[in-house]
Amino acid sequence: MSRIHDALKRAEQERATSMGGHVETTLAPPEVQPVSMPPLEQRVASVPAMAAGFTYETLLARCPQTNWTPDPRTMLFFQDDENRIGAEAFRTLRSRLYQIREKMPLKRLMVTSALPKEGKSFVTANLGQVMVRQHGRRALIIDADLRSPGMHRHLGAPQTPGLSDYLLGECDEFSVLQRGPMENLFFLPAGRLASSASELLTNGRLKLLLQRVEPMFDWIIMDTPPVIPVADSTLLANFCDGVLMVVRSNVTPSDLARRAREEFQDKLLLGVILNGAPSGRLERSKYYYGEAVSSHA
Ligand SMILES: Nc1ncnc2c1ncn2[C@@H]1O[C@H](COP(=O)(O)OP(=O)(O)OP(=O)(O)O)[C@@H](O)[C@H]1O
Ligand SMILES: [Mg+2]
Image 1: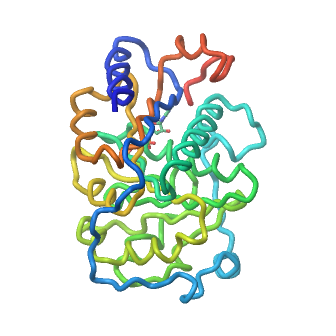
Image 2 (image 1 turned 180 degrees about the horizontal axis):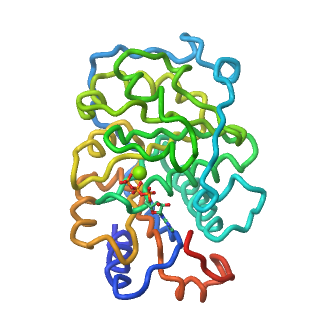
């Protein structure tokens, strides 16, 4: 985990400099493989996805296209411009994830951070988009932040019905999944605000949902609440193969980033994403962009 330590250290040092609009990835290779999932609640019996009729064809047939208006300032892949500033960093992140996947089972990812407003939703949304830019790859973005959902705003998509409605047993899978304008990219919004988020997330239905939708996607990427104020992300990690930790350069206090990181077992933590890295360093780095920096990654 020394690379993660280095990334946290760098974030601390960069607090002294001005904030830019970049994402830099520092993924640590997994130290333990394969991933052994911690025990999950056993209240819901395992349901084989295919037996329940959950095929991609059924999904396409039953999930009509939803009207999304993605935020053009932060959603990097909805337009045809392949060279948006920041796009290359997400391609780098994608290839590092595929490298890790060669060594361990990796499909369910979770994006989290220590505090609010560090870029969790920004990273989750763009990671989902860059995944489906590869031919035939399918991705599902889940807004699992039931207390303060924000993904629907980034995507310009309806917030309801969604995960909370599903967890309350009021909707089935097909009625909460949305298909947007980008081929193969699906979205499960948070749904209506839930007062008992932790209880809902562990009532057994999330496990069922993931089992059912998993065979239809190459990647499932969960946007989650910040780690320090609430326990939801720690609970959600039990449903994931790997955790990506966002650190906002120049913003996240390093001691809180470390505390957040300690919530997750080493083997689950895939790496740190340094969001909003100062422009100077990246301007020097042709590897990333080779062009001027804007206020958005
Ligand atoms: N690299 C970046 N450059 C510029 N703006 C960014 C960057 N990353 C995030 N932002 C902006 O910062 C704000 C917070 O980002 P985001 O919503 O992704 O944070 P979050 O961690 O999901 O917050 P919350 O904990 O409230 O859900 C948003 O307005 C987003 O557009
Ligand atoms: Mg968010």
